[in-house]
Amino acid sequence: MGVDIRTGSRGVHAELLSEMLEVALSAVSADRCLPAYLPPYPKGRRLVVAVGKAGAAMARVALRDAPPQTRAIILVPYGHGCALADLPSSAMLLEGGHPLPDQHGLEAAKMIREAVSELTEEDQLLALVSGGGSALLALPAEGLSLEDKRQLTEELLLCGATISQINCVRTHLSQVKGGRLAVLAHPAEVVTLAFSDVSGDDPALIASGPTVADRTTLQDARRVLERFAIPVPDHVRRILEDERHATPRPDAAAMTRAEAHIVARNHMALQAAGEIAASQGFMPVYLGDDLEGDSTELGIVHAALALHHRRKGGKWALLSGGETTVLVRNKVGKGGRNSEYALSLGLSLDGAAGISAIACDTDGIDGVGGHAGAIIDGSTLRRAKAEGISPAGMLRRNDSYGFFEALGDLVFTGPTRTTVNDFRVILIDDAA
Image 1: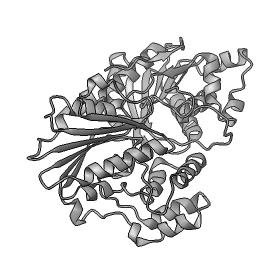
Image 2 (image 1 turned 180 degrees about the horizontal axis):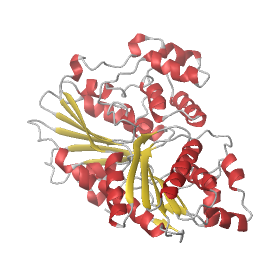
Image 3 (image 1 turned 45 degrees about the vertical axis):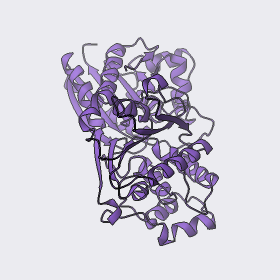
């Protein structure tokens, strides 16, 4: 199932950049990545639980030719599902809130908890996990309300916390995260296949690791909240200070039949795109697939690298991934971390000729606005000036969407049904 990439950009290398994104997304699709990792069927029943932005695509592949007794519960963000005709009648497709949890996610999490708890020693839980699953599996710890988790999640998102920091807090305030779902499945076999949207590709961090032993602690969660000076209600603080809410450790007896594998990661997307760049005469340079930090600051750094390579002469492709963050100064601003990075990059390049770039979220949704990201080139600032638009002002107001919308340089894919974090390419061509 291919992805339809749409952009109004007609700049230098816009077509090549779009092609590189398309190839990158194909390289980390469920059809491409999942089949080789599917485990043998158990003696008993298999329960498929697919959670996250890639959940529907992963379940569709895993359920091909499945025995009739195979049960499946699929939980995805709104709009990230698939046609019911692509799934067996035994599969249940549910949708919930993301990035903020909602009541639908809560009810789905309860259903998953009950189904998993019924498994026996001869049964198997096949957990298909991808980014977005942490918000979707919204089953708060006892004594905690859904609204409590929503408020904490929103505060963490607005202050610029990384996804790992956010998930650390959510894990310790949950009944199913941090390996607790595997404990509920015990003594059944638990096989986790994950699409990684976290830097370092640690399966325990993807969707807060519902079936993977957690290595963070209650103290770690408290430190995250303290670092960002987030006010914590007394009843929430009591939970984070109570060792009874600690997550199961890797050596816990209930984790002995659990295994986890990463089946898709950012590196695979970058390598596929790099091969396309090389076929067009560009020298690929991989800056890393785990870059974090502020989107604006990374744009400044990458502009300096791009200018350095332009001075060297020739054709270069600077590729990078990871997950940056945005410090929200304007709550009514529109955009996301990739479009904000692209705007900072374009501003820092100051109209340098021969340099063009794309920055997109591989899940197809870059923050607020429904876009995947944006494209820039040497004409970006000149066209903005002609439209009377201030790039620096739009950047300060967190309105990167408005900036690129006015220029026609937004990129749209819709939900891609995969997710391996951000995808960034800068092309340097001294002959362009």
